[in-house]
Length: 86
Image 1: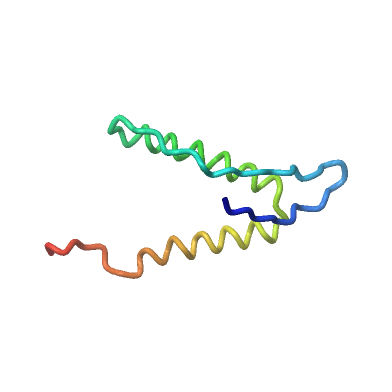
Image 2: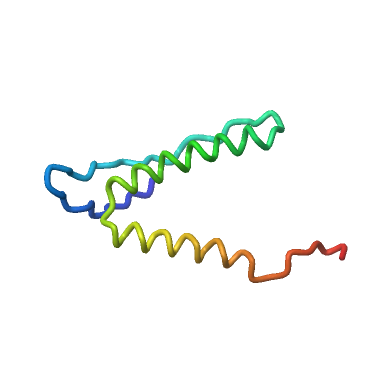
């Protein structure tokens, strides 16, 4: 298991950042073929992760993470989106 230790945000007044442990080890469920079912599942998983990170990470880390994630995603579109049949 990979373990990563990250600094949490400093307190602001009486608000203290939560300690968070994210464990990624469950298998994906089988979907009944419905895209909306899969979309809803992924949305819940993503919202859970984002909420924990937003409440715990320093703002600078959260912002950099967003930028890095977008860079990774945009790199997928650096080639034409056509099939070999075209």
